[in-house]
Image (cartoon, rainbow, N blue to C red):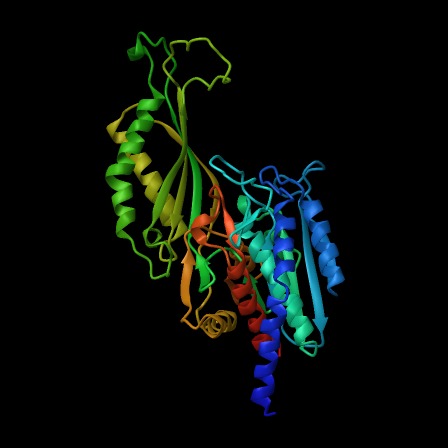
Length: 431
Ligand SMILES: [Zn+2]
């Protein structure tokens, strides 16, 4: 056989090896879903890491369990455990698959057991099925099938399961990056199997800025509000300025990043919460409210910004509106407390891992891959800023719009197809 014919025969063998693992892929995904790693509070990280540890050691990986001591939420009750598994076969590049092991709260509206992992019509249901235990399972199957079919490869494969992505990733990828796990000397290519659809390569994400704004007033009897100063009315003025000035200005700004869905190609802001006046009472409280003018009102804003916007401008646009209100409302006073920020991250579409995954999508699915960027942030920010590793994309089988929804699922065929894309990417990068 010619060299090309031999190579094609091995790619066919890889296809067969992946599809032969269909039942294994299903039970692996179900087993991961059946460990309810809810975040918050960050439950059962050790249990899921132990499960992955057994699985990956049986497949020949060296494993390391790393607790992110002292990171937000880490406690004896809810320790932030992570697993990093490595399979080495001679000198060469390292391809790292990073998946977060936490899932968000269940919410209402489910027709399936959120932690049952039911398989119905080729779909596996459960919280985290799509985001992103299905992606984790697909990457494990991809690596195992690749190692079996190309045992002579040169380089290393790493698979990590990391904590707390849904709450910022500080006890997960950020911690590992600080410890050197994503240093360019150790890892050269990163694929994050987040649910961005099986035929799209995600190059990065927008930035985020979160802040609490409080307006102040003066408490007085509710029958004589003119003797006090109503903090809720001051907040009403803030919100009304946002409506007339800020939201239209943000909607005008468009990014060159290929963000999906289309609406997220502009700057956006969510008012996450609002509270003013007396504290909410327990649900079983049957009394009536006392009559007071509220002296405090608070909102939390969630501002997502574009790679073309500077964080300082994002901040000063909001504080400018607040300071401007002082001239219109003589007693207006506010405090702004920044809660967190994340800078945008964007991998070049010519980066080796981006081009490789795109080419293998075309080879497996017979269609051109789409390059996209994510509306929300994910752990790429830490790999980029702390790890200083730019050659990173998100690619996984889940459907973006199902993330965090009731009856979240992942399609078994989607997982198999994306596992083949991942495995063929390993061939291109390591063989
Ligand atoms: Zn996710």
